[in-house]
Length: 169
Image 1 (spheres, rainbow, N blue to C red):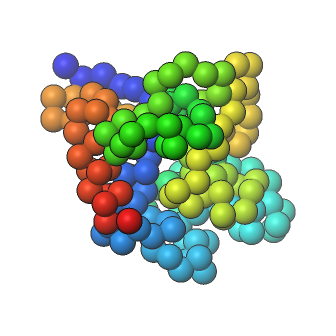
Image 2: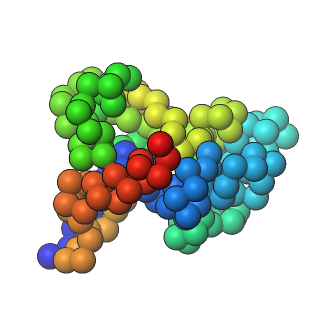
């Protein structure tokens, strides 16, 4: 049976970092920040040049999975609850990458057109409360789940996340 759900931290991080061949790069396109204008909408190529808005998807280059706008354009709401100290509280973040402990804020990933590129790095996590939020800087990515894809990060993404974290240490 197929369905949809919001992305979570592990899905966003894996989608953004695996294309860099486990190189633990700052961005899905590598470590060269000079390349960011080819892949991402940030303050420098939007707000600073008089284009204060999110741009249509797929105007820039995709990452190695063919996914567009993994960095910049709009923050991606994730289903994880936000806790700035979460990864310090769990024994093994690779086995439990998604914070399921209820909290007022949810995780935001990827940065947006309004801020500098440092907020779009793969490792950056922010948080905000979704209640009553309507904002031109926040969006979401719907994940299609089916028989061959994991239903939750614990089903299969944990092993990929663990491999990624081990390579980055």
